Length: 358
Image 1 (cartoon, rainbow, N blue to C red):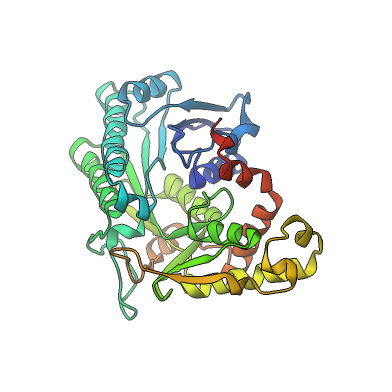
Image 2: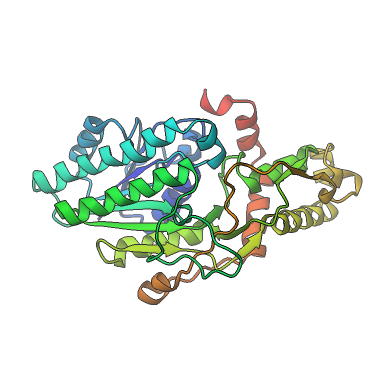
């Protein structure tokens, strides 16, 4: 049995990971530590409350004494570190929170893990798995080869810079102190529970309410899209089979320009309205309710500062070493995502009216 401490698990990817891990490893115990900032929603994991394998703790990763007490109390042998400020736009207008959480918070976790696992001699078989992003590598031109693990770091936003710094700290604690660590750098995740400020859920909900679909610049920025449970499969492989001290890039082999993503999304939502008359009743403000295409809502807006042109992940290392292979293509993953938001209206309505944090 493994005793996991999962940070940031009330957020999008962390929530999906806890669900995925428990289904795949029901014998393991999971302690969730989350500060419940704006993107954290304790209700995401409410179904597990009271179950013997699960405990939720409201607290910050910057609180080293709290982390130390949790590791001792629950005999933690595996840390899976998702907790991060992650929205690029917010890092431009308010970078301080990104420095505090992503750098100082990660360092606090590393110090607590080192103290419990190494200094005090507990859990010689341990692992600190750090979840990072492809944005640490900077940007690519259209013809450039995809990011690999040997690509030099060149972060272009305060968010990316803070994640790059945390990656370096994790590496340093392995090479200097012998902490057993792994790191994964992922491409753009999408799927259930994603906070509505991100592109796909924002566009889904704006289509349903008849609001504009804002596209930065010309919409030709390219991203590699990764369905969240494909990401979780990759993390599980790294945790169970990855080499200590190594980094593994997890991607979806799925590069799309932003404008093409939104066009595909609109087409899929159009089809759902055409096939289900009840949707027009539920969402009368959507152009789809009037038989019009959601594409009529597309609106181009001024590009954001320092907007990276292209991200692409070369996942050959994890595929070759650990047998990783993404299951979802974009049609199947995007269809699952749309259907989840249609079936979970109460979830996103509670975010829109602010009641999810009460």
